[in-house]
Structures are given as structure tokens and as C-alpha cells.
Length: 328
Image (cartoon, rainbow, N blue to C red):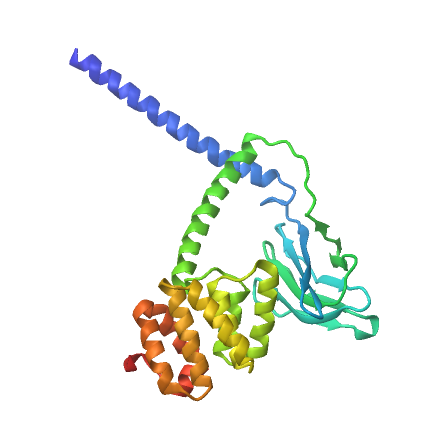
């Protein structure tokens, strides 16, 4: 009887192993077939250029109107693409405030700004490897009634815009890799989000960049960014504290004081309170009152020591005052 039971357990174990191995083989085979049979699949041997254009218009200040355009070109094929170009032409009356272009590989990008034809920029990448992205970002000023003219191409033809939604049937061979990729993306997002929160303690936004500008005495640039942030999403206690500092550094002491009062009312505890104290100390140092600023820095460090020390490391004002970690 024991021999029969042992034999049955052995057969059951073997069946289970075969089922598991079969499932693994089926999943792996499905992924390989899915990837190999796509137009831009692993074995296609072609370049496939697609791009997306993100166009935002409507940043409005008292006397100016701003817009933002981002164009991302991707080679999703398996072959390196020859010279790739992103040509952008804005309507008359548009002024380009800031622009940048980069390849994910880090190779240099050339650009031509043809002022004789109005606001026209031609970005050129020498090569675009398989899987690589070519990204351009432009901040512009002026009324833009229609979307700018965008032409994306390489030496072999035009790229395909992928903003449109296509109706495609979904098979199991498509679902498997999508689900696996989705799980990886979610886990990566959770990990990176936690890292960013621990590092910055604030939401990623124009406000973070403005705060860094203030540490390096780039006051006018910080004021512009914070005004754009106000129009885009409003202010939290962090933006109020940074805007108060920016106004004070720019000479508007009355508005700065009112903003600091609002920030102190809102940020009554935690890291937000530490940021308000740190910013008030920074303004005092800029005004020549370093010794009066020292107690505020000490109070900010008691609340949120590690991030405040990181801010002090990059702050030109703290360096001017001679404030170091060992002093606190």
C-alpha cells in the first residue's frame, strides 16, 4: 500500500512539474513570437521613427502670454537611423524664450535658429540608435492661435506621429508582455517616488527649480518660474515660502513680508515650517544680518536636519555667511 501511495505522489509531482515548465515555456515563447513578429520587433532590422508633440498654451502673466512645446522622437526599430531632424515653425509674433535639445545617448545635437523666417528652429541629430530618444523643449512668448508647424524626419522619410489612438485587437501574446511591463513600471515608479520624496521632501515641480535658482542668487529666473507655477497649479506652503524669499531678494520687501506671514500660517509644523525658517534666514543673510539669521537656521535644523543641511551645501548665501554643519 505504501508503495502505491509513493508511486502516486511521484506521478502527481511529475505532472505538476510538467505543467509549471509548460507554462513557463508558453509565456517565454509568446513573448519571443510577439516581439519577433512586430513591425518594429527584435528581428525586423529596420528603423521605425515615431514622435509625440506635447503642446501647452496659456501661461499668462500681467502683460505676457507664454506657451510650452515638447517634441519627443523615438527610434523604436532595430536599426540605427541616419540624420534625424525636428523642424518647428511658430506663427508670426512669437518669441522663443528658452529651448533645449538632447539625445538620450548624450551625443551633441546641432540647432539652427533662422530669425529671417520668424520663430523657426531646426534641430538635427547625427544618428538615432535603436531605442534612443531625441527630445526638444521650447518655452515661447506671444499669442499662438494655431499649433506650430512641426516636421520630423530622417534621410529616409517622415516620422509617424503617435498621438492618435488606433483600434487594435488584443491577443494573449500581446497581453502577457504588457502586463509584465506594467508590473515593472509600477514597481519602478514606487521605488523612484520614494527616493525622490526622501531626497527633496516636496513635490516635483517648477517650484523645486526655482528654489535651486534662489540658492545660486538667480533671483529673476526664480521669480519667473514661481509666477508660472502659480498660474499652472496654484501655491502650496512651499511655493509661498519660496516666492516670499524671491520677492525679498528682488527688493519688494512689503510683498515679501506678507507672503512670509501667509507661509508661516500655513506651514505650522514639519518640513514645511523648516523651509519657511530657512528662507527667512536666507533673506536676513542677503540683507547683511547673518547673526540674526543664525537662530532661524538652528530652529530649521532641529525640525528637518538632513534636507536643510543639503540646502546649505548648495546655498551661496550660507557660504557668504560662513555657516557650516559644524557650527550647528
